[in-house]
Length: 369
Image (cartoon, rainbow, N blue to C red; front, side, top):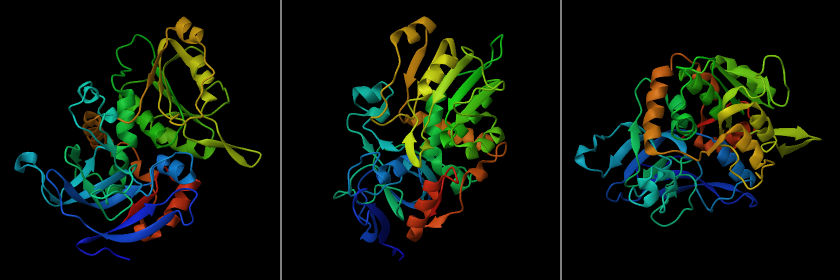
């Protein structure tokens, strides 16, 4: 099935307990309103949050078009002439549309805008028929921040910029491993794509050692290629950090472990390890536990006696997207980013791509219209 010049193909998610839970359909492309952009999806990648939605672990409105990581090609736009945009531009876009006027936006928390719209997470409604990346086209709303993708960045490398990389840029913002009279170190709990990006970002920020742990030992091989020191989660070795020695701990544990043939979430278990490892006056950044099963076994005394700062990060602000594009553009030759991605699947074969993504053989599985 292929979309015609005035029609779009989309994959619609109907709910995790519905059979079929995904359908493909063609729809007309609506006329653009002021400030909007019509983009053709050049490449989309399957994010872990979409896997959680499809499995039922994460609740989203339905019916919906999932997918928020992607590179688009500008087909048409109705933004001001001085926007610098033109047909054929390759763009990445902020995963949220925000008003820029409410108190949260003015405080730099655009991702928590009081009138927030999030691409790939919203229900299909009238005048919002193309709002996710698992489609041939997407309509970017008026006011959504977009950034041009440099020509030297391939689509598959650039696709997760607007989610995984920009979120990690937000998480490490202001961290600097240089200028200390001692060796600086960081510990990342989870070596999915965010963990891999975290290794690169912290090494480039001057941290002498960046440890990265995971229960999935198959993923640890990739850590060294991106500047990190791989460790199997839950196992203390002489190669790992000593207690109370790590400047920064970042929790991005989105993986799972097998117990008696079933998969259980291991997210909460890593917190006690992180508290043990972080040095007095250190920082603990929490990113991955975006689900209800995240009650922590933690005392105020543990935080107070070590003078620990605990910081929560959810998504990012527009400036982090600019920084993400710039960072990837500077480091794309230095690190083997291509190895993180699968060969692209056609949108018509989305079910096959989804099964591969669930197997976690690649950090991202790619989809093209």
